[in-house]
Length: 126
Image (cartoon, rainbow, N blue to C red; front, side, top):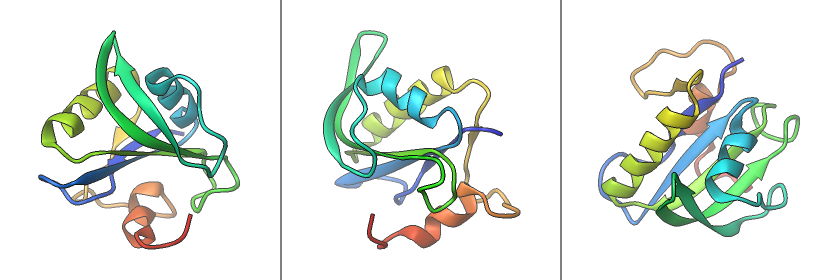
């Protein structure tokens, strides 16, 4: 099973951008980015850094396998919405999640996958 990386908020300039990771490598990847993971389903402010470079300060949430909408382990990064920040986190993901998929709004999705469900989750309580 792949770990999926997806921008869950609108593309372009925004105040906040939400990135979601889902799959078996989600928690480990986010731990490498922010250090100590927050408690499941609790938002925590974390400094995101990669290869010694600070990327952003973001709210980080994790959801355990079996306790998320998709049933997979997942994580959310609530970033500052500048395109430079989103690009830096995307480059981190490409370098860290080598065997994963990047979701695209144009990509067709079959079955119950995170990429097909996330657009419907906006506005739902955590």
